[in-house]
Structures are given as structure tokens and as C-alpha cells.
Length: 438
Image 1 (cartoon, rainbow, N blue to C red):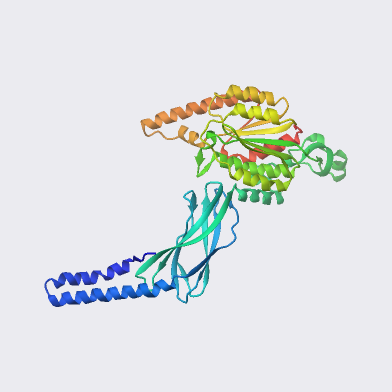
Image 2: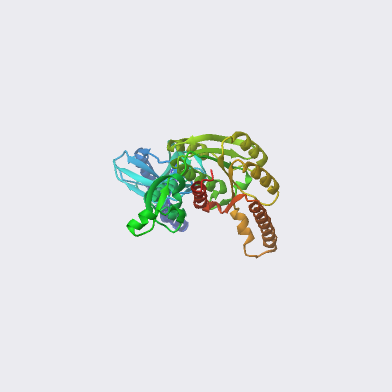
């Protein structure tokens, strides 16, 4: 802890310095400058001596709610001044460089023997856990001639999960019957099974075959039959963690968006009575969760997907398809989340997906590379921009051709931007269930 002189102290020494210059011509002024220097030094020394014993604080980070990736999260720090003196303090948390600190830096006036709460605003850009080892404090001296940089060890571990706030927001909407705000058509929650659940007023998306004519005549308005949605279906999600999932936009990569949507889909599937399996792969099978069911299963999914990171390797799709063929004995909805840059893997996708689709319902989700689209549509300013744009547009053209060919062979494909995945994915899942495709 080394005291650092402030501008005020440096300014005070300007006065004797000017006197020293004037003292070159008049010896009496030179002596005055020496005594002035001694006086300022004594004041500075006194300021240090009365401040150092009073740098006593107690720091405590209160209970931390798990962080959501890509969101502003709050940490409250309680500091207690253990002395009788008023202190002026600036705080900063020691966090990794992949966590954006949005805290507004300001000095806090802390009264003697008082406590104060400081709120920090942090935006993590990676999932996983990190440790806040230290809190850094800058404290001004009694007469504001120095400041002291202090480092207090706290050693608090924080876990960064997928976007929990988005999940909570969705749960709130479903309670208020406002699913349309998430891009989800609420009428699709109703199934087309064989067991009647209830009657309700006819809506424009209802099948006319489900109108209850007796009830409609009695109430003088169209009434629809609502059937219970089929349950106990198997949903298998294959999640690519290869290099195609590394593209970033606004700090989040493609895999982050996929993980957030996977979490919400899992919750909906559990509520619908279905079971979830998750297979994570790149150039190998990274890990798997098998046949989870019930809301409590989210506690198993959360730590599993929180540790996932994209790898700069080529994804081995042949290995994945072989693995799915061996492990998926019961008919299931298989969802593959990945991307397709060109037609290199087209033949492999067409043959192996068509083969799996004989027994299962296969849904291929392709997440567009936002950086590639940005380069394809950028304004041309230099010759380098011309080459980059031409190459990007050619890659997008080949990608679109491959997608068109896959659709031609009746392969279910969703081509989406990563941040738009949640709504269409849930819509497709509910559509498949309501039509009894499983």
C-alpha cells in the first residue's frame, strides 16, 4: 500500500519552487522557500500518519443470484467503516476481462462506524463460473493530499448460466396467457389427440372439424372442442459445438443463443410431459444427458449446458448420425442445431437425415453466420472490401442452394438467425405435437 500524491499536493510544491527561482537573486527569499518546503512536507507527513491507522473496513458480498449470460446482473457489496472518521472511497471489482463492468464509477462518502451498500452492474459474455478474488478501493487521505490503493480479498465464486432471465420472462408470459410476445401462437398449445379436454370459443386458427355444433347452437356462437396434447414423447437435441458455432455478435456466439433456446424448449417439453435427451458433439461426442423428464430435470440440464463452449474444430457429422442411429431405439423428435456453409456436407446430410427420418421425425435447424451476412452486405470502400463481399456472397449462395436441395427432399429445415431461434423453434415443436407427428 503505497500512498500516491494527488494534484493538490503537487500544486502546493509549486509555490516554494517559484520562491527558489526568485531566491537565486535574493538570498532571503531562498531561505523562505526552504522553510516553505519543510512546512509542506510536515503537513504531508502528518496527513499520512493520521490516515494510515484509519484504513479499516469490513467487506461483505451479499447473496448472489446466478448470473445470466449477456444480461446486466447485480452484485451488492456491503462495506462497513470500522473507524470514527468520514471516508471518501471509490470501488472496483476484480473480474475477468470477459465480464463487462457497467458500474457507474463514483466516490462514496462513508460516515464513521457506518455501513453502505454499493451495487455493481456486470454483464458476463461467457457461461461457466468465475471467482471475484478482490475488491479494489481507492481512499483519499484526511486532507486530500494523497490517495491509497487498497486490495481486499473476498474470494466469491459466481456461476454464469444460460439466459435465465429470458426463461423467467417466458414463464411470466405464459402465466398471463401472452405467449404471442415471444413469437409463439397460443392456439398451438391445444392438441389434436383423441381425449377431449374442454370447450372454448372458436378461434381463427382452429380446425372447422373440431366445432361442437350442439354447443354452438345452444350458445349462439361457434364453440371448438379442445383435445389434450399427446404426452410422453421423446425429444433428442443434438447440439453442434464445432467451429460453425463460434461466430459472435454483440459479445454472444451462436452457441450461446442455441443454449438459451434449448433451455426454454426443455422447460416447455417437460411441462408437456415429454422427455429430453441432449447430445453435444464436435469432432467427437462431448457429452450426453439421456431421457430426462419432469421440471426438476432442469437442475441437471443447467450445469451441463452452462459448461459448453464452441471449439475451433470441424464437426464430425458422420459420427453423430451413427451415434443417433445406435442410441435412438424409440421413435423420437430429433433436432439437430448446427449450420451449413456450403454444399460440402449436403450429400451426407441428405442421405443420413433421410435414413433417420424413416423411423424418427427429424428437424434440422441451421443458424446463420451473422458475420458472413454482414460482410456480404457491407458498403464497398476498398478493393479488399470487394473481395470479401464477393466471397461472402458466393458462400451464402452455395448455402442457400444446399438448403433448397434439402427441402426438395422433404427434409424439415429451419434457417434462422441465432437470436431469433427461440420463437420459431418452440412453434415448430408445438406444431409437430399438435399434429400427432410423433
